Image (cartoon, rainbow, N blue to C red; front, side, top):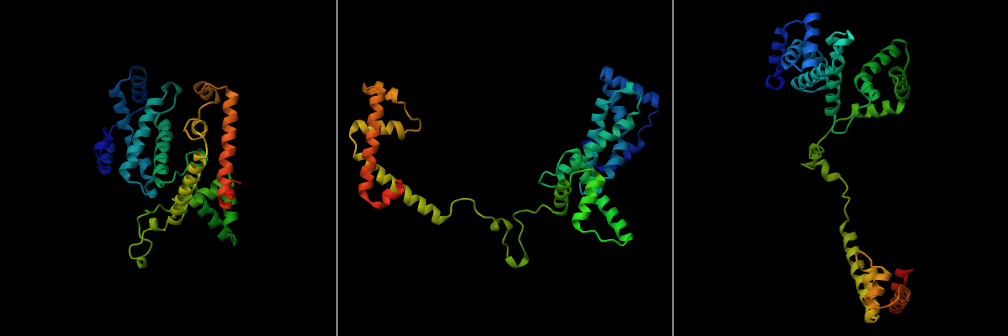
Length: 292
């Protein structure tokens, strides 16, 4: 059965007309697929149990997913079950397939519930699909006993009931209570088209900060040029190669090029820095405060 070529009503009608397999036929088809990779046997097995997949998919309609998509996922789970089924274990295929169908549908629902990933661990899945039911039951029981539960007590009871950590309950409660909204949606009718995205803080530099950075950069460049001009040609070359290149050159490579020892290049570099610092300090106290 090509699942993707029919809508949910067509799939349901075709599934209801499919044959019912007895245990012996089911076993024979399972062996044919496992041992011989007989695609005709697989197709017959899948078609016969597609009604089971559709029935399970219908139980998840309340989560808002399109029924046809749920059936698609149920069919994928059914095919995974057929691929992994071991007929030697003495279990009916339908019993084995239920787990795979349910797992496939649940994964799909959780993936599409929110743009924010809801979770995929077994405890998170248990919370997602059981928390509201358990919460409603606990609230009914408390009301019948004349008790009032605050949010913390209710979360603690849900945590104990489902067997998951309390922080997982708190996280899932927030996820289930919220909805996804487009940042391009208007905030309210009074805002005349103002969108939520307009209210987001710009992480980039603001205008005043950009001007300040540009001014400081220009000033530092001017000071650096004046300091470099106080050096002789060899000193400027050493400083430029050691400090102003993307990849600084080593003392040894400069010594080889200049015909000097590595130690002599180091001494010239240190003397150049002293000379540059003196030049900058003589210009103004403002430069001095920058360097300290």
